[in-house]
Amino acid sequence: MGNKKNVRNQREGKDELVQLVSNVNRADDVDLNRRAFIKATAGMSIALGLATIPFSIRAAIGMEEDDDAKEIIALDELPRGKSATFYYPEESDPALLIHTKSGELLAYNSACTHLMCPVFYESEKEELVCPCHKGYFDLKSGHPTAGPPQRELPRIDVEVRNGVVYAVGRQVRHG
Ligand code: FES
Image 1 (tube, rainbow, N blue to C red):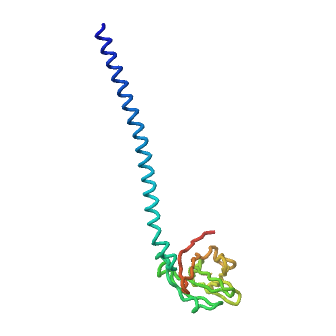
Image 2 (image 1 turned 90 degrees about the horizontal axis):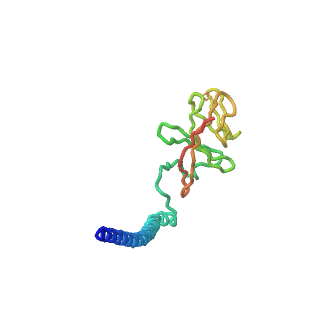
Image 3 (image 1 turned 45 degrees about the vertical axis):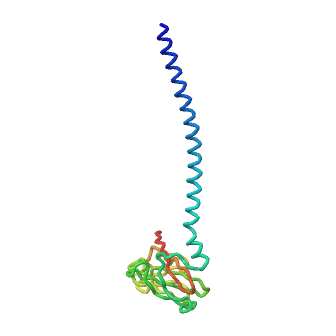
């Protein structure tokens, strides 16, 4: 009987010791995890900061990030009221850059959305015209305004960089 009690006391003593050690380890773990988290966060912040330095330098000296931009024409070669043809995004996609009379730069893929005839800029009336079946498109939006075309012309985003006009993206719209 006394022996059983001794064994039970020993077991309980051992359990308490295990519990104590476990608590100590858990407290250490929490502390270690906190420190590791702070270190990792600080490390990531520094890494991100360093990673943006080249962009900052490029921005400071006026250089643009190399992307899918495609050079169209020098702006001083395209007076107001004139247009220039180019291809974007592929060499098989004809496009038209228009320098409006008010100084805006607008660009569209120029294959008519009816039967693909080339669309022209009509500077007198400031509109886009397809001569094949007398299709008309709004200059500012590319929406069809008269004739058979039902869909807008895909719009091309342009940017002027150091006096040169670039195509930088395309919006294919429906409706
Ligand atoms: S192809 Fe342009 S109106 Fe028909």
